[in-house]
Length: 110
Image 1 (cartoon, one colour):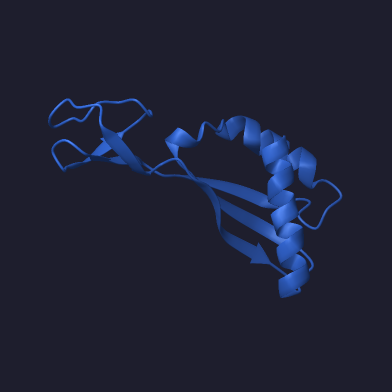
Image 2: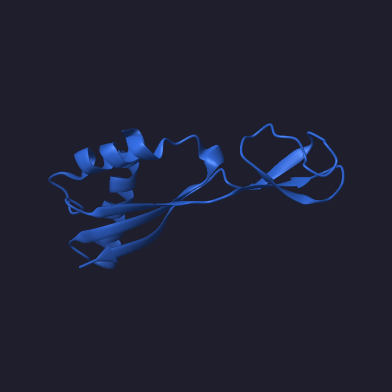
């Protein structure tokens, strides 16, 4: 619920600075390491947006892959959770480079 409220705050702040009155659609990019349940967020989004400039807005969630850099073998590997091992050398010395983010990618406004 608090994530949906945070999204609404961003939408309201941007509406004030960019002078739009209605949000028709929101595209969010979410990585698997962000620990966000997309179904719960979709439900909360609809509830939180009622009575706001984004009431009735369509929410589209774009799933990003998890990616990490192996400090041991210098390879870039796909990961699904934070403590995966390197698929090339088996090392656990991975630095996450993508997949832990959640960001508003695009808005359709009026």
